[in-house]
Length: 202
Image (cartoon, rainbow, N blue to C red; front, top):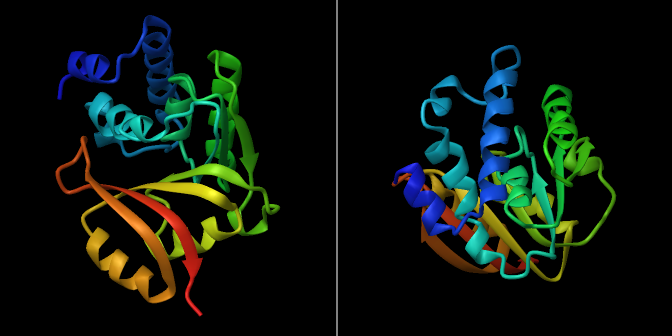
């Protein structure tokens, strides 16, 4: 999918487009001295990072919902979701250099996400409407992290790679949930998982 097609598919307006372009500029600049993302992923960042993050958007109907992006790293997908209209986004990471990058985005770009430096295990028990994650941990661990942040109708949206089926088998030994699987737009080996009604097995 080309950049023009991505812009059209997600109906990005001029300010969202400008925000994404500014984000990518900052990411590429920061990545020259601090390793935020793999260099090869910056060859076509509109596919590897922007499209990968944007594919979550259609599954968030209400852009005012509170979103927790676990292990946000370079702000993916959380910063992109915030640039594209999600108003209430919290980005958490335990890596100080990555948090510094996210804080610099807050001052350089017109974004309004919250940034938290810390490990998920040590965060207070706050409830969120939507929990996202990309390339942080296997599914069983993601569900363990998520458990303390879920409310009654929380939706978990995770971007997973080619090992997704093995991860699902492992996770279902410990958890019960309602699952939707969607083919990734950005990588034919990838899957977007939507998980609802998460419960720990007895």
